[in-house]
Length: 144
Image (cartoon, rainbow, N blue to C red; front, top):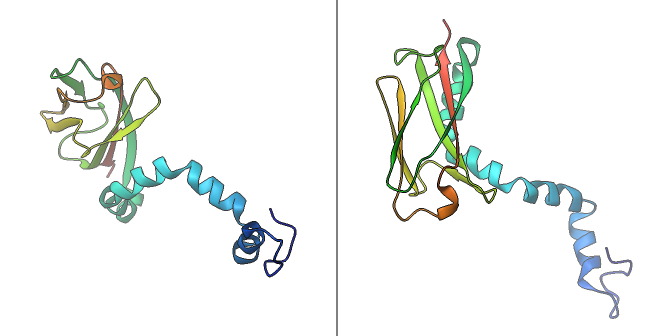
């Protein structure tokens, strides 16, 4: 960054940044590059806490699937390792054709779990890149 003293009248603001954050630029950049994942974890914090409390007694499985067309309802079968009685927590993430990740609760899709299946519906006003997008259903379940 800047090589001049921050008090130097010919210096740039970069030297002030250097003085305040030191060599933390790499750390800030790494966090910036992971903001999507950090947001996903933050919005699923309840599931993270439940899983952490039950960690020795639980396992997690990812069940893949695909969305349908706008307004279409799709069913994805739960992993054979899981029953409704052993289900602890679950979250859904959609990865669209443009590389965007959508979390449950963003308004672009609705989902519920009934009779051992994820029932997911893409809303009619969802982005077109979400049509036939990849579904990642993370399920945490009791193993004891």
